[in-house]
Amino acid sequence: MVRNLTRVFFISVILMIFLSANVHAQEEKQPLINIKTNPFASMLSMIPLSIETFITTDLSATANVYIVSSSNGVSETYFKQSGFGISPELRWYFTDNVINGQKNRVYAAALYSYEEGTNATLDRYDVPIAGWSHAVGGALLVGNQWFFKNRFTVDLFLGPAYMSYVKNEDFETNLSKGGFFLGLLGSKSSGTRVKFGFNIGIAF
Image (cartoon, rainbow, N blue to C red; front, side, top):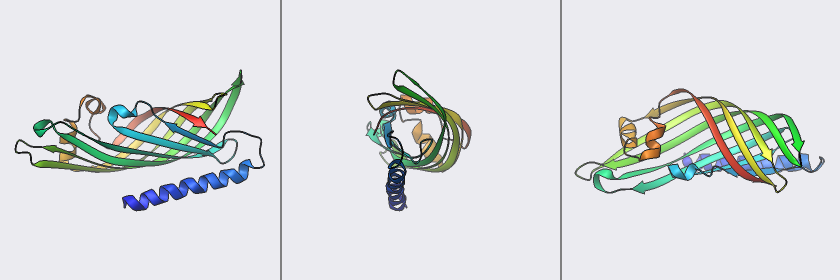
């Protein structure tokens, strides 16, 4: 299943780039692709990547993906986690302004999310305790993205979201041994929440 999702993800990215290239060939010069990441995600042993492709001047499609992989500790302090998430996103930029060559654009967005994760700890006899989790959900966002002259971009967003989790009991128990930052996030429970984020990137 992971292999199929990965194949679909990369095919989607290629199709978005191809479609937007045809549109932009007849439009004024502006960013075609915006590659972004969250510089603070490493605190959660996460590698996120977002590829935003402009289909028209005001409409873009984004492929968001992240990978989690880490292990630390020994014996009863051992904790290992791995997983991934895929979130296709559609954005509509409804207003913008330019100040000293810097373009400030406000947008509304909708996205769908799929996540898979596993974790493991060891009991007092060093027997692995395996946890697993699957989740689907979505979000409606409002955001602001700044496009600077040097192609550098800064993206902030906020909005309501919903996630539905299916997991075993050991997954939550293991998270309690995952360290300070995972402890701050709390348990992964189904329901509504506030989704917010910050990305920096380069636009081409």
